[in-house]
Image 1 (cartoon, rainbow, N blue to C red):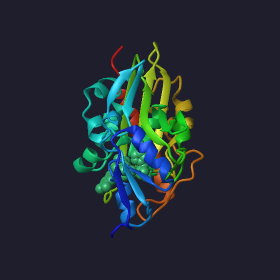
Image 2: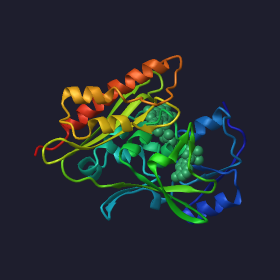
Image 3: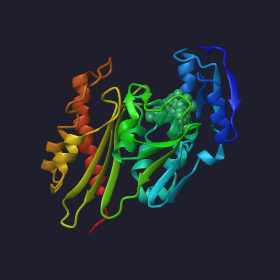
Image 4: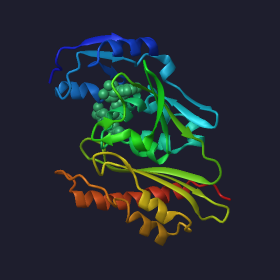
Length: 289
Ligand SMILES: Cc1cc2nc3c(=O)[nH]c(=O)nc-3n(C[C@H](O)[C@H](O)[C@H](O)COP(=O)(O)OP(=O)(O)OC[C@H]3O[C@@H](n4cnc5c(N)ncnc54)[C@H](O)[C@@H]3O)c2cc1C
């Protein structure tokens, strides 16, 4: 398919991008183009102008600042997958990145584009919800931050307002005995998540679960936090029985999607199975006392 006609403008700075967006309210931001261009080819969207932010150097970085991990929105999946800093202080992110598409997709697609696209089968939303990330967005009216839990509103719909650019993902650094992992059932044709579960677990001095954060994607119209699993794990020894009992609540209160490949019931079942897998994998990565 061929997209409808559109204009293209390359922004060299964030200010330039904001001005272009303010001048044309139907313009769309182009980052890696790996979700937007396919949607344009299917004519699901027909923006009159694309504002390319892919060459704005200030939007692609991974750094630690004020006890937080800060990732620029235009950072590619591959840059995250291969970051030594993230491997050492937030391994969930490189783990999650390694599950996305193939090498070409990971080289071009960005975390900001993926999060802003809010695909219900996208991987990043589960991880950033589990990490309780804050998303920094900027428009000509100023800057604000949105908690990951409030960012995903519905299928392909986020809390971003017209004219706003997502610029940074901020994650508080966890200390102590913490383990993280991502477990995913890949759709055999598309590679997207039939179900993807991100887990981050912290142990207290007694070796019991102090805090569990679980983000799940693929099951419903938007990624969500599995609060019932988190509360069921809290304070337990994280033995097989506790993990199995808690994981059974992975889709509690969730309106699961069904399609030709996976019915709603099967997705709910997978949510429990992959929650169990993500928790077990996260446990294995917890450093010894
Ligand atoms: C073959 C293939 C396989 C894939 N497999 C997977 C997979 O397994 N898992 C997965 O999660 N994804 C997968 N993807 C999607 C891929 O990860 C995309 O890169 C990602 O979803 C979008 O990022 P992008 O940088 O390409 O954004 P774009 O396509 O450029 O933009 C996507 C949307 O976000 C908006 N946008 C982009 N950046 C910003 C910003 N900074 N602020 C505000 N709005 C913004 C755009 O206007 C657009 O609406 C796959 C894609 C392909 C083509």
